[in-house]
Image (cartoon, rainbow, N blue to C red; front, side, top):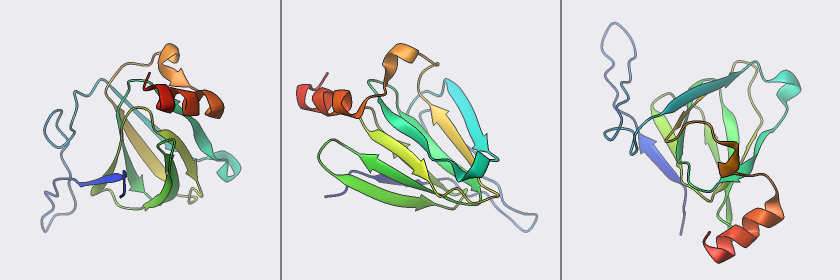
Length: 135
């Protein structure tokens, strides 16, 4: 059974062009506290390689594409994000890696909490222990 959750975002496009509106606790299933985006990824370097204890995120590829590898401690799944109309929901205690950024990729990430270094799990073995212990 897949643990990857891809959410269709509200497409408000018309003859003038594309538009997606994002709202906390509506199209985004958490209260939005932080937004950041990744672009001009140097030499297509992979990113991520961490999990969060509590933070939830939604990743949206606004332009171009990239490949996510998500891991719940038991299974790994891959998904390519390539549409501004789809959001990848990343729950807490999910290891995430981002690879294969296209040259024109702009990846926006919405987060449920403000930046907090203590929420990060940056060592994969620590992540596996956390998933077994249920932090």
